Image (cartoon, rainbow, N blue to C red; front, side, top):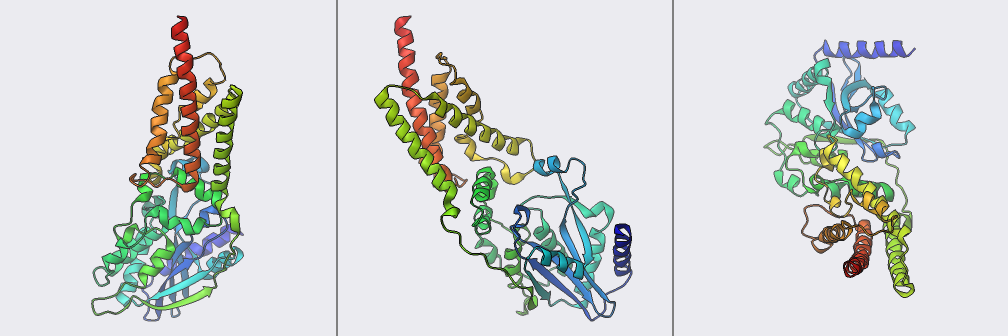
Length: 394
């Protein structure tokens, strides 16, 4: 059954390529609403081509990937997974989004027949086996940027967008936040793993990466005579509004703040009891060190440009993993004191220069960085005293 379906789809595409569009044809940009799964939480966009004369109603989608790809998850994590241009009948496309309870909004474009035909011809060229696949980039090469590039190539210099509108867009990181409002742990993790590139702004229309941003900007595209590109906007499936869920949205900040308070109280108890509870520092530095290895791996060993140059490595130093495990041994090591001094300095940099750094530190991470700085200062005092004692005894 599946083979028959694939054959029918291929035949429908071949019949589309073999014909020129009629004057009754329409081209619309379909903006798809957000989904529940993390991969769909930022929405999606596709291109719809209709022609009542040719009995065509087809959707073209630049955001397709194949789960059967060898080493799928490894390639996805390393940023080496190929995405592809695909197509299917609109009724199948709509049904898929109905099953996921996602909204659909169509913007019909006021294009001449010649411009519509150029879009179809460019789609045909992109659909060739050597052109269909591309290496996905979260910000700079995705379904939105590919579709904008296709449209601009097809309409040439006939349509224009005020560059000031692009300049007013927020940074990539800031643009993500509203979509992660009800996913606080995902928001915290994503903000931690994104590096300096996430804190720059799009400079060109092709660098816009969110479907909702593309939809709003398309409404502002016009000819020199003031004619708008979007001639009609129609809701195919309404948007489902989600309700606020209160304190859950600040849960990472709350947990990290409670951890900071616990660490401060533990320091006070250690001072009064003249006792060192090393297990807390072993766990703290080991976990932070593991996070540091993750950030470093995403920077150096993947093709995800958005995770490069991650300044969170200033406080989540990967060597903290070995330092934390080394605290299990009570014997004082000569490397500990200089390591603590350097680590303390590094952890203070994102706190002192918070507003000046080219990367935004997640608010929920600030209590964690403060805790690290506090525990490092206590360890500095502890091992400095121990070092002096060894020198005296020697």
